[in-house]
Length: 438
Image 1 (cartoon, helix red, strand yellow):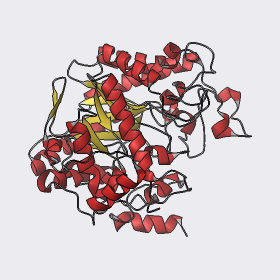
Image 2 (spheres, one colour; image 1 turned 120 degrees about the horizontal axis):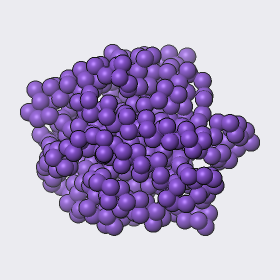
Image 3 (cartoon, rainbow, N blue to C red; image 1 turned 135 degrees about the vertical axis):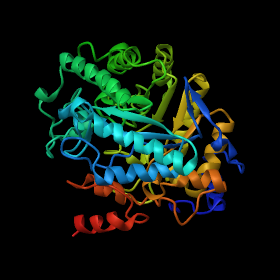
Image 4 (tube, helix red, strand yellow; image 1 turned 180 degrees about the horizontal axis):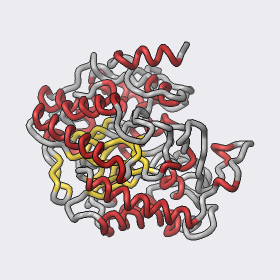
């Protein structure tokens, strides 16, 4: 069965019918060029650059040459919301030695970066984007010195198999208290740096996300729903209380892990992998009651089952599921959440695989009040001006779209790799790809 990204809307429509994925389609994409209010902030259009980590900061955690280049391209590309990549708030929680890390000592570098993003977008497009920083602790994927140094919520045999991580790497409740304090402090630093908001990251099995499925953990952060969601809720509450009223406090939230109970969030307890929205809906309602107005929704784990959150044409393994079915699970799942919590503004993920059909499908969902903003991840590496083309021309150009070939992921998984699009952004990434494949 054809697995290529769609370079015509006709090819998408044919596959959508063949697979019965029931993804809606709207010819008129003008809804994507309408503003959206989040508190006192106005997002000038419905297009989002999702957080895409470049692993290309300096050793002391500030944006370096390629980092700055990437955000200049995003700024000029015209997306109304630029979700700044994973930025560590604790040194031991960095995912690699070049992951961004914000602290008082390097705050001026972030101020300059945010200022440049806003100025460039205003100059090129006539408006400033909303810019949100993703505050993170990488948990089991921590590798601050370049070698794995996992800090886990609990042992997970799905990942660890016959080599369980030592019990002394399971973080204590006291340590999680300190993580919460660091996330709140990171939110305050983000506001000082000029960001419009902060994302308390809770996705893709990093520490906060892993806690959502900590059914077998003892103590204040495990077992019950209240305990498993404690770090997320309390860090969001702390950020809201410690930042100004017009500062957006949000989260990129995993609502489905794609792993069976008791190792997965958003699944039934019968051992199946079916998405169960019961706890995600309960959590989103609680976050709304805290004052959270916006969430960036995702699923799966890019290290283990990336077909769930970033369906690919080619990748590191074969799947029985067609990529379009993965897109459908994501988008229909987000629509289910929106139906249950209509007051929460939601960003959709997994749109990149749709290729030229993406703005049409996103417009249909937004017109149906099934989500509010369209998020693009890998597409931003390949096609940083995707938003400008959608807004000005009403379409994406087929010779510019991401091919979902997974080469950017391959670079990222290679020690020292700095991911980018090998196909569309050949200088410098094609040469880098050649070097790591010698």
